[in-house]
Image 1 (cartoon, rainbow, N blue to C red):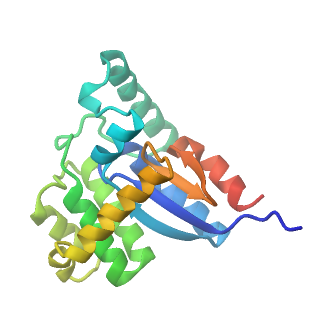
Image 2: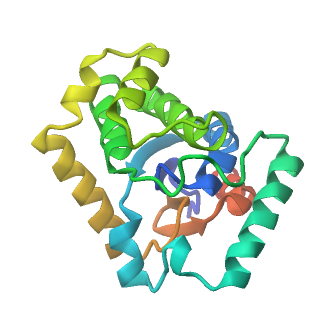
Length: 203
């Protein structure tokens, strides 16, 4: 009997998550090397936290907030990825960015959506840009070589419904943090679990 796993990964994340940024390029490379299909799933962590027991950053204990900064700097150095641990525009509203990513996914496909993800993550954590500003998002769309119409299309009811559906889907399968990579119903939480994602794809 075959015990091989599927090659589909559901990629749940919040556009403002530094950990998603730190893992994104490695995750994309792992998925490509395995010939896996990625299903891009931006979610609203503001809806997930009340269900999962998580807390927004500002409500976490001071020692947890302090350690987070240390760990971000540590991973930035280890991975060789630039990162401002206290970026100018953070915390930042990310619903509009999530909807843009969904619109790109709907109209241009997964590869373009993953490219848009990378641009959004870098905008927050490297470039000191405000992803809560529609003009910044419009610029990122063009910089990714995509149609300027994606910004307007991101405001559609179809996109909003998909965003809500992804968030509810994450809650239903017990995703509680970002990024979460889900393979055959098994959750791998955090960019520091990507070794296990790779093993699951290539046992």
